[in-house]
Amino acid sequence: MVVRKPRLGPDDWTAAALTAIGEHGLAGVAVEPLAARLGTTKGSFYWHFANRDALLEAALSSWDETYTDAILRTVDAEPDPVARLRALFVAVTASERAPVEVHLHAAADHPAVAPAMRRAVARRTAYIATQLTALGFDPAEADRRALFAYATYIGHIQLVVRIPDAVPQGAALEAYLGTVLAALLGQPAANRAG
Amino acid sequence: MVVRKPRLGPDDWTAAALTAIGEHGLAGVAVEPLAARLGTTKGSFYWHFANRDALLEAALSSWDETYTDAILRTVDAEPDPVARLRALFVAVTASERAPVEVHLHAAADHPAVAPAMRRAVARRTAYIATQLTALGFDPAEADRRALFAYATYIGHIQLVVRIPDAVPQGAALEAYLGTVLAALLGQPAANRAG
DNA sequence: CCACCTCCATACGGAACCGTATGGAGAGAC
DNA sequence: GTCTCTCCATACGGTTCCGTATGGAGGTGG
Image (tube, rainbow over all chains, first blue to last red; front, side):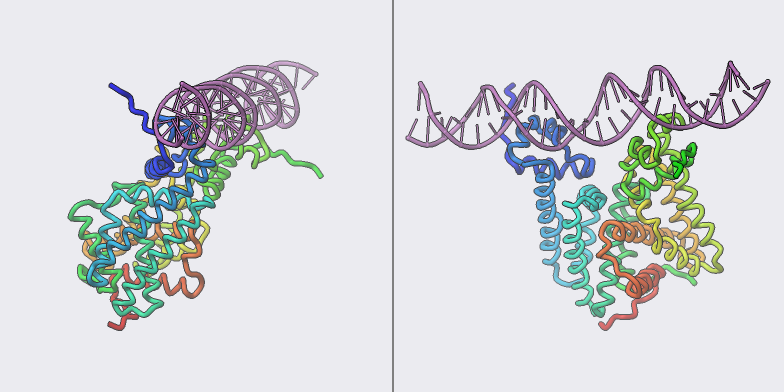
């Protein structure tokens, strides 16, 4: 049994860093533990990166592309605004994106993370607002509801990651998302007696 | 000028710990920095507490009372369900509670914090659901909308703390909360052309 | 006034990291 | 084969924190 020792490039470290963020948050981006997991030593890391912050920057840049650009490109292929919003909801809730998103938001006080978060919020809410405007909401109301939707999204993934027991699953989750989407679109409530 | 050296009790450490959580999260609850801030040394701390975790437990217990019990007691004095929900919204958004809430949620993977978070979510969503049921929603829909409201709350304070630029202020914030509350109550949207 | 009890200061050892220095090991150029 | 450049291993010093040990200051009861 030969122990392979493939040489590593910066991308290997960046990917490992993103994985670590999903598992242990920013604190997981620690050089020595990452080296151990990659089966190498700090010597390798400090060859490819100046320091820990440089690795963080690289990981955040990769996050930008994967977690915002790619999703919005995919969703935008849907035919109409409601379909796009629904696809967006499904894409961002029913996935393993949540841990990375949650941990990064939780680290937005870090000077390297804050700008990435601001970029993401701006781009995402702008996209939602565009869809709502296309649906007939006036611009100010569209902005409000876009922020509303985004806050709900943030809270949702937060609960999914931190307190999974609080979030329904399966059919109940479907019903829940139905209620949420209808409310965001300004449709009146159905299941109400009084 | 006499430098007073008042002797400290456990409560002083607990209060300092909660303050530190609001400022730097769980990582802020570190014995030596807290000692420095209190103008004393670790010797004092390890007299009053067995270890760092014991301090955390004490701080969380204090949090339970201040950040859930007290608020719900106050709000429940309002005359009707809508007034109670509105008062709840105002109470939890327009305050300096946010940092502690956000940082604690961000630390819900810690074994001592997780139960406290579960307790808080359960109690708070149950209270909201009770109000919604009183307004005529059937129980399942009330639960869905209670979770919806709570997710929105979590996301909101998260944004307020992490990315304040994304949240409107003043009159715009009022309008925003109006939209949110109306949507949660299942009222149809007004500012819509199509 | 002295013995005791509560509280705190100081010093120490240990763990987990970051970052630096330095000496190679391996592979391609020629 | 040997030179060189890329990449990695090892060892070291520095920082920040946890937890322990121990002695002593200062008020309090007898």
